[in-house]
Image 1 (cartoon, protein in one colour):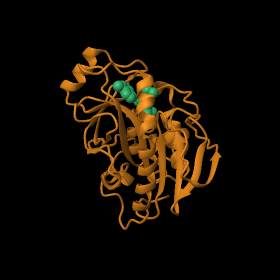
Image 2 (tube, helix red, strand yellow):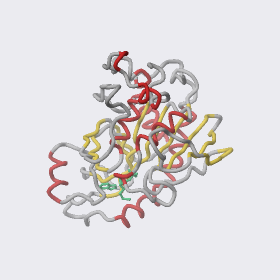
Image 3 (cartoon, helix red, strand yellow):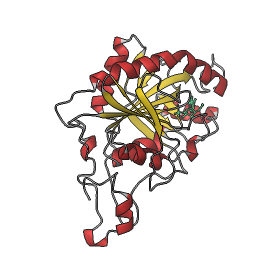
Image 4 (cartoon, protein in one colour):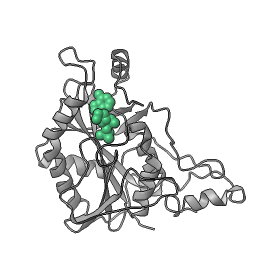
Length: 293
Ligand SMILES: CSC[C@H]1O[C@H](OP(=O)(O)O)[C@H](O)[C@@H]1O
Ligand SMILES: Nc1ncnc2[nH]cnc12
């Protein structure tokens, strides 16, 4: 089993507007099957500065899949099967704070999950697991992303809460105000259950939430529309590409296991007695939970 103390394999999940990773050398798209169904697309394998990389467009090439229909379990399972140790999630988001203007990259550190119609766990009847989500973002990945953004002079903000909404419709004004009153900093539709599943799969996970709009609460800005998001994303695409190119070499060598314990998340999580476990489910979990099964 791959350990995050050794050589990392960096996965990038590309959100809206990010459907390729041009910078990769020796690129090849390859199908990876998962017992949890079909991932959003083939995986793009390659390397960057000698580091093995795997890219997956979250909504598929051409943006075919809406946020609630993304098979998050298949995506995370496929990345795990591909050997990925660390996931950088690149996501568009709306901002709830004046200071987090469009173009800002927010390295969030918390999530509130308001999604309602998604499969949120690899585990279930026959093998029950309860992992900790107290600190859902990998501190080592977050540090590296923050430092890389600073070195590139990209406006970056460390920390903040990402409200994951169900969508696909954007929020009403009342909802937008409610989330602001909850002290959320940004909003999107995809990072949950993605972050939960990455943790269950013992992978380091961090989000670069790229602010594209002020949702609909700001008196001086129009309510968010897809056209605005794409316009801002196009302007930020170079920054996103540069960030990935800069951060990956920094993640190359590591002397220790994940300081946040992401790579041992299942150590104390399984509660089902060994003789009560479902062999079929255990088989499906060979990649996600193989280390502890
Ligand atoms: C294209 S507008 C809304 C869409 O954009 C964000 O997607 P992603 O997180 O994959 O960048 C947002 O969450 C919505 O899914
Ligand atoms: N305002 C917003 N709400 C939800 N998802 C988004 N993605 C980008 N902007 C968004």
